[in-house]
Every structure is written in C-alpha cells, then in structure tokens.
Image (cartoon, helix red, strand yellow):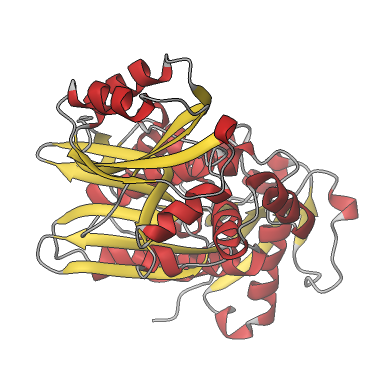
Length: 420
C-alpha cells in the first residue's frame, strides 16, 4: 500500500546541511519516500541556493518549522544549545529526529532516547560517530547476535592526520599541526581534536550503541597528543609500532572503562596503517571475534550520506520501540604494558633511580632504549614496562617526575598490543 513521503525539515545549511539537501534534491528516486519541505538557518537570505526546489520553504524562524509539523527533523546545527531544545521540541511533537550532533548525545543521550520512546518516535544518529562510516547500523544490526567486549578506534581525523604525517616525515608536532590548519583539517583552535574532547564525545555515543550504557563525558579520561615528538616515533618504530590517538571502551565484568589518548599500536595493524584523516574502528565480540569499519570520518558529503541513510531507514522503521542507555559502572582499565619516554639532563644514576621507583610499585622493566645523537642537556630515552595496573604506574611517575633531572615532563603511553 503506497504511503505518503516523510516530510523533512532541515535545521542548518552549512557544510553538512547543504550536502544533505543536495543528496535529497539530486536523488529523485527518493521522492516517494522523503520530501524536503523546510530549511532553517540563521541569516537564511545569504544561504539560499538556486538548486533547491521552489517547493522548499526557507526560514530563520524556528516556530515556522515546528508549526508545519514535519515528520522528521534533521539537526545538523551542532552544539548543545540551542540545538538540544529544538531536538526535545521535535521529539515532544512526535517528529522523528536525525542528528549528527555527538556533543548533544554525549551530554543528554539517555534523556533524548527516553523522550523518543515516550512519544513513540525515533532518534537516529549514524552521522554522530565516524561520519560516513556505517558504524552504528553495523553494530545494531550486523553484530546484534554477539556479546560485545570492546570498541576501539581512530575517531578523530585531525589527530590522525597529524600523527600519521609525523610518522611519515619525522617532523615535529607544531609544524604538522600548522600544516593541518592550512589545509583545513584543523580549526584555528584545535583543542577539541588534539586534546581528545571530540573523540571523547564519540566514545560516549559508542558505549551507548555497543553496550546500551551511558558514560558521562567526565568519566572518559582524555590525554592530549600535544606532547608527542618526532623522537617518540623513532623509538616506537624500534618497537615495531607507531603512535595514534585511540578512543576505546572496554566491558570488564559488570563495569566499563574508557579512554581517549595517544597510544603505541603495531605498525602493521589496522590502526597503524590508517593514514590521513580517515577513521577506523575495531569491535571485538565474544563469539564473532574482531570486525573493523573504516572510511572517511568527516566532511560534508560523507557525513550527509550517513544522515540520509538514517532518513531512508526511518521510512521503513518509524515505529521501532527505540532504545535506552543505562548508567555505566566505571571500573579501572585492564593491566597493559607501557611506553615511558624521558628527556633528562644527563648524569650518573638516573636510570637506577627510575628503576627503583618503578620497582617500589611492583612494576617490572621490559626494555631500555637510547638512540644516539641527543644532547646531554636534553637526552631522550625510553623504558618499556611489562603489563601493569595504571594506578601504581601513575603513582611511580609522580615520584619520578619530582626529580630535578628532567628537561621535559615524562610521557607515558599505553601499548595496545595483542588484541587490544
């Protein structure tokens, strides 16, 4: 039985919003399922595009949008406010919502999902994590039969561009980050990307879709990639590794642990081979083992594909029962080996002092690496330690850092090897 197309209101006509509109306008075969009726944007007069059909209403008055009672509201404005209020209003009105807003989901995901269930509608957000990579559909549908154990990935294209370029060129962080800004990969203020806040919000969403649990953004430790130097890539290479910003969440017993930050990964792994601004995510299951997803993690067209895929999905699934994210119990991370890099003003006894403080926390040394060519007043060397708990390692590093021989603060990176 033929049904009317879903009437779609688009909030935001920036890079992603305009790409969504273009797909809907350039794919007439979707016309009997999806009809773009409204485009909302501040200063809408400067946004008008002549390729949008004249049947579409342009407005900068949000009340006009909601007064038309659309079937679906697409939110690609970003930020928590005022976008959050608009998403709530749409759900309360019974409209389905498709959003690419990871920060909103990280802050209010459980509340918005409950609101969708209460009003017998849907909240869809494939585009909120990994852009054009069909990750959420893959987890919800392709892996629904497994019991998932871990989700880990490279979720921020800017950080991956910076680190993979450093690895390939032996250049320093500041130089490569400046290039990323010139090329448009990094914002003028790159803090959200390089300090882990962007990937942290995506981890919250991943925990929700993979485990049905809500981690507060504050419960996800975030470590910056800023301290990584060219020396770290030289030492990582000697260990058969490279360095990437890894976002991950583990199920451990009845609890969960998450983190975002730089880590050593094997050079030949999916993470180690991932170059440029692409995303790659690996999901480990109890029965099915590991599955990986990769592709363009950002950009208007790639993200818009994910948005439109959610819209198409809604045309056949408008009466789904929805989902719930329950509060997550936070537990410590599993024991891991670590890479410890020191830059010191050289003098006798430094290595013995460090080894003694590590031993006091029952942490065993695995290897000591020292490349030639570093000046005596800024001597870089590396100690790797056997798998240990994070808390005693951090306690030992606090003691070590108080010594007066450091030219730079010590750097500790987890080594994600053997199934991590």
